[in-house]
Image 1 (cartoon, rainbow, N blue to C red):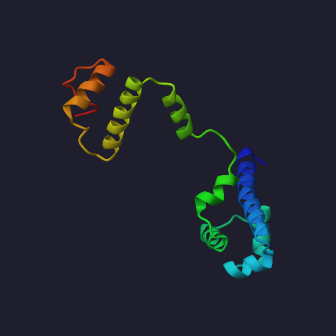
Image 2: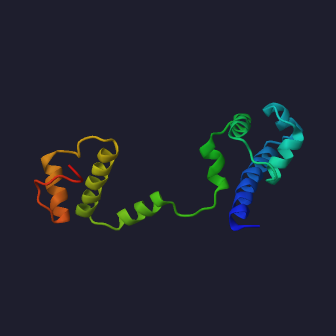
Image 3: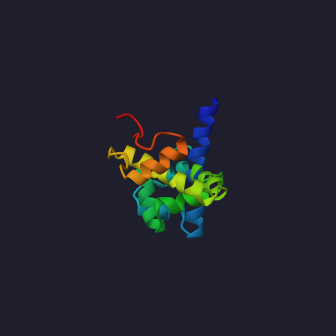
Length: 144
């Protein structure tokens, strides 16, 4: 079995195991949950063991029965690894106030760029960013 197949199987099992855990916490049998969701009990069993992938539509129906959203479902199901966002926050906390302001301005620029808006044309922003990057304050970011 290839590494990719093993990962897919583990991800499928992760979802299935989470469904099983939540079902048992709610004292539901496979038959009861399957009936509420509108699937066969044997299919639910195979989903819980990772033999079948859980279709998104089926997962949403299961979450409705459990009265939870997708974020809540995956919150405990995913291993605790530092996310990129968490890493950025940690790095940001190590900066001084001026450096944090520079990062904020850069993020504002990147968001504007992504939204295809003019590159935050405020003169003070251009000047501050240019100073930070050793550029001419009159120059604009990115291609003209």
